[in-house]
Picture 1 (cartoon, rainbow, N blue to C red):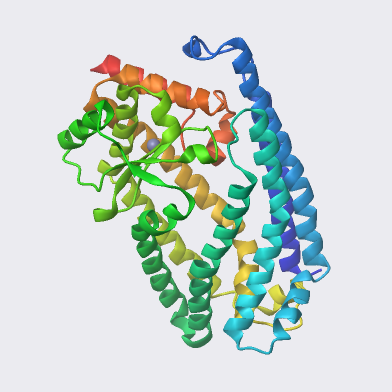
Picture 2: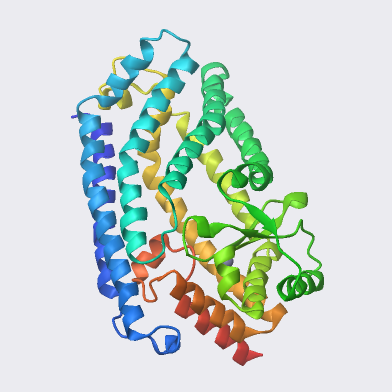
Length: 414
Ligand SMILES: [Zn+2]
């Protein structure tokens, strides 16, 4: 048997099995008695609902991967990639256009397979727990817009990468790296003004107590930005959130309308102060820097697998091509990507503590910060007691009880 095939199958199956172990541990770890800290925020009934939500989502995720993993494995084993490649080649176009057709068919197929799952998650699970506000129309439009974006953003990038690997010889990976990084930076500048408005409406925050409080805080921090916006998140879900987006002149603070409805001015400014902390501590900048470095590593590694005979025979391909090399490489890269992701999640958790500390240190209302955190978890039925292994592997934020403890500890120290 082909060594690459063995490695790739081990990666896919290993990933599937380890997911099941972690998810099962996580569900079993959830505490059934309400943590003391949450008394007054959750009643027994509502807390039970949060746990059912966790259980139901976990079961659903396991069912989805139990269906999609065998589909992926079977597709590889029966030579599905070669089948798609032969279709793409019937058009007798150049290597780049053929590559776009090849990748396009694969993308579209995997998107279509995922539609029923995402419909079930939105219209059955989220609906049952009272989160869903998405209409069928919004659901379909979202899918179409995502495809349109993929076609206008991913297709040109993929073409440029194919072109460099086809023409630029040994240094192709460096050119690809530079171009993709420039493209990514341009995207972070323009996303808030060009891409986000495709999915949501943004309104400048109206005059009032909230706006005045935010402006006071922003001024006290010498923060330059484009303004504070309210986003119509309620058109999809009742879940709550807030974020900073864009750079330089395009930087803006976005608060979900669902958040503004339910939180006090002090709680909202605390959330904003937390986001400001991320910015002031250069977290956004550092994570972009890290993604630039890892992207370089990825392109460097790709260059070893372009037209790799062994890899092509693992996928039962009749012809080698650069475009298929890139897709096959993604299978090999998955474990490396996972290691990188664990490392960056670890950093991200550390930065959450720093942003909390910044918020409490500058806005000086720790109780508002704590109640905002509590409300956020209750509103989103988040798991209060995740398993440490689950946290280690995939949590970008520390478990909320640990954040609250850290804020209280800091408060005591001062
Ligand atoms: Zn944060």
